[in-house]
Image 1 (cartoon, helix red, strand yellow):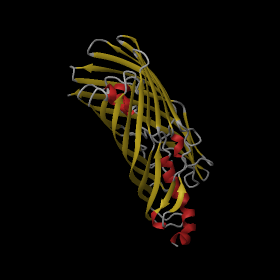
Image 2 (cartoon, rainbow, N blue to C red):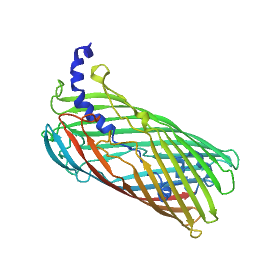
Image 3 (tube, helix red, strand yellow):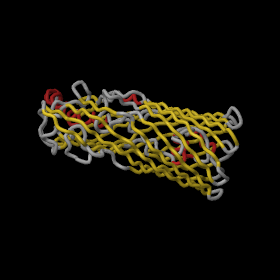
Image 4 (cartoon, rainbow, N blue to C red):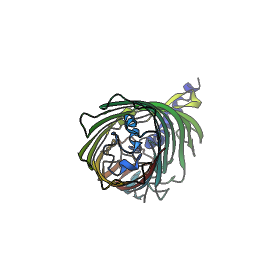
Length: 427
């Protein structure tokens, strides 16, 4: 068999190709929370309860039963302005090189669309189109000393989620939905650092997977609501290529077809909303994301009979998010809101990569809604995210470490500004 004759070649080349794929796939918490301008203004507090905006269905589809009569359409736009730079030292074979990436983060636009239709007092239909996962990093200097660990990274997704909701009574509502998700990955590394920084390896792959959503809302008292939502993980078989610009580990230079199966994490969202006065409400959310389910998916080479090349050592922890917010109806047209949150990253120093040096974050947000008339409304939200102290230590024992790329040790300075706006119209 071809695999038997090439077995030693595959094992000796694993370090080169696996360092490319693992460094990219372990890019950090690459989920996009920015799916609603309305809830952006409260750091997503109460995002699993019903309200004027049907964008809550992203986290809890049962909130579709709070939609107005007729057909409602919402269009949300979020502009993400991140900043992150790495400063430190890349030591290769005993020679230190100063590291200063400049800004590695790329500005991004995230759009979301929601549609609801009230069939009757009990039955509701909905559709959400979102980009739940995404990543774009590229150091300002593409040939920086640590380019062996990241030259550029792009992750793109689009998710269509039709759903149906049922209002059991004034206390309980339930809903279920189906997710169809397209996932695309494009990644580049230098083959070694820093001498061959201009020679780049590249990985590309895409695929489509299917999942589900489900949710429940509960109103035990007048003015009190609790929501529980679930978004399943989605298993996607990614087919693509890995390119080697120079011979490596016995493999000649060239492009090789690869396949891997990636399972994005499921999320559970628990939210609450409490009316304090007729024009004042407090809201809260706690969210769990099962990032640890990623584990170590296998990568196979199609040209060698589907033989396993290596495993991708994600080794993430689970992620958590907690937020608290409030909103105040200034008058019948204008509502003001604010919120704060703390996000626990699934990535710790012992696995943190140079592609997305993720860490815990602090959120502070503000926003407003303006009802132009009974049919047309606008939402606005702003968030500033403070990154906590972050160390990067890619040294022997780290899952991304390569002798030819050296030890990368440094600190990361990061922050994010997010501007969101949406339009809501009911026919």
